[in-house]
Length: 423
Image 1 (tube, helix red, strand yellow):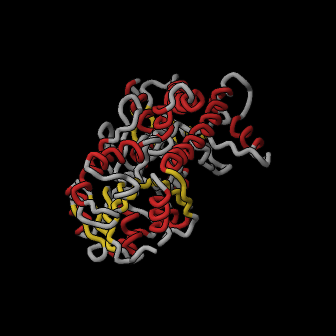
Image 2 (cartoon, one colour):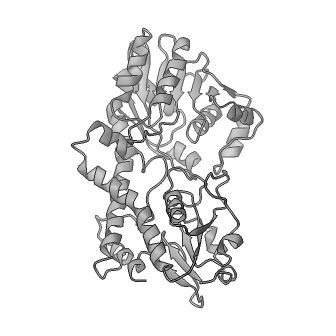
């Protein structure tokens, strides 16, 4: 059993680390949240969290400044959880700089019997390789002196608080004792199954979950490309095929974004390049889709002098403001490089963008020749009104998400992947 006097120190207070800290604190643990970004710490101490999630703020208020406190460096604790980013290098290999730095920052505070958990998404062999090596260099034996495990996050933006409690969790230790103790810690609030395994199996399970989805989406996107040479409606083909009891083809789209599906497969390729031709091909297909969309936008506006394109949605998925790795950014850049005027609208994205300005729906649609939907935000159903469409020079919508529903009386032309190449 885990004593509720147990002190947990969580490094990295982003989309995963902060909700994890809030959840443990709400379940009675004393938690110290650590982030090297002083501005983030100041915001949290002021009671203004930098992430928005359904049902999050009340939980945050319950514990912030009480059982949950904030620092810019680790403190002595019983358990350390590393939830820092793992970006990628230009060659798509994992950049483990933050994971290594977090581990080294913890080392001066370690005591025999402490538990260390890596939640950051990492390539296989990182936990019992790189992380364990840092501990060994400091005189600690992973699994004996310091218990060490990997517990990958498995939540989706927009549902983090629900899924952090109800999803099954995979906990992989460098030995059985590490797995058991780490699993017992998560069982204090996780209502889904907590599955114990080895560290490398936990690392690979996370990567394969997202790789499976990447490959499935690539299959759907390849079907879209096939429609350019065969007289088929890809969305209709998928709908029909999915009536088979053992088939579930995902939907095609403008590409794959986010810090999971668009990144995780490369962590496997990095470790087994010769053995991953399918994974690499899927990545190539999905990475090609922004160029496909750009070329079709150019084709649809080829007869228009100096066309204006209204882009609705730059988030990588619907109903969130997260634009990390979003294919929309590549599409906008491609249009700008082609000299095409682009007006961009996304009411859920609050960050200031580097290469373009976010404008209102009215400003984006005004005198535009094509409105391109790149994110399936529910609020767009009301935004794309007949009044708004009437302000366009040409009321045409390119819906890359198979999302828009126009009234039968609408005079606007709706184009999606079912007839894109024949429009």
